[in-house]
Length: 495
Image (cartoon, rainbow, N blue to C red; front, side, top):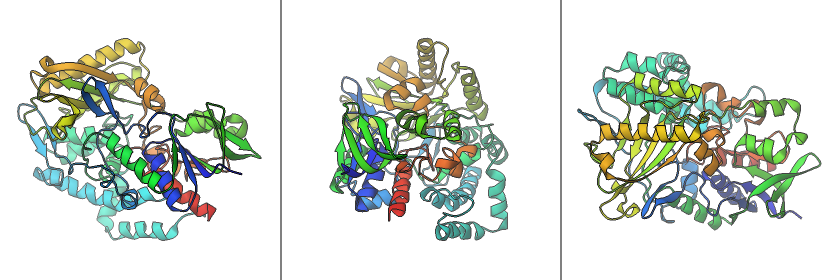
């Protein structure tokens, strides 16, 4: 007899979302998490005595509406701010409102791109469309009608923008170099691409479809705790410190999992919210896959280009604006491009660009009284440097120099710095190559091409096994969308 109807591997946002949907669909679900706590990259960590910060992701951006409707996150203790304005510090600081508006040409461009993003957004919650049978034609027809109603001019504009680079759009449409830099930075944040790389405007539309970014009160660990409570309330059995070492296969079908302790859990279906390559190459093994699939798995690119820095401060940083804002340190489009160029060769840029959050401005309990914490996502950082220790030291110095220029006097307030290079992120959070999306997110690796065509609709190329991580459509971010989509696909097939 199976231990559960379904075993879900991985307790990050996607694994939890998948488990919640499956349990609400009537399945007996066991969720297995290798670490002592669920959350994956959505955790709150103490990186120095008395200083706490979100471990990896530090903003709530696009949490799936279906997941929110199915859970009482507020009742479980999770709260987040309203969407944050963005400030570009400097001699003449510039703040861009979160709810639209801003300088004239910026507002005009955002209205236009926002319309495109809104029309494309429903695709995120659907299995990626494919040629032939098996599509949800009713839902796809709704998306098609939305695009048709846009009118010929808007549709032509969208088709033109999909493969264009964001630098060209910034330079054509915006007069203020600071706003050009903001557009270039946001389009390439978390991607292995510079603003002049093809397809980066599509990445920006994907970001716009997520809506405004909010700061979690108490760190991202509060969200993970709320999702865990919701999962357990739905009847999910959650086991932590339960590392899966293999997917049990019998009769050419996934039949359960084997844990590091030697225990085997039987199930009718297995869902992995881990990286697709880790799942298929590591837990299944090539003996159970055809040669073409093995080659496609081996060819998947994993280029993490973002590093995370946690900085403990003895006082308030002087960014020249409300500390509750999101700060972007990127002076120009060329500066973003120059930050990307060295990492192609495993080297560190002289002047990284960065997104900075001051979590203690929203929740003072994250640091001792009067002290503050900075959470910094800086890029680009090499995922495979020639000398890892030297690269980490050089990258840390470069980021601190950029921060000091934006907030003079900050270096004298630093009590502790923790730097997570892409290799550190890979080791701590299981993100191969330090890639936040479980594989490169680019135009050629989206929709039915993610992670590769045979596995693009959440069903792995092994019966009984399903994929629910950011390696699948629609990609990364703490949204739960890929996990919810995978659960919907499994329940539909099992019905």
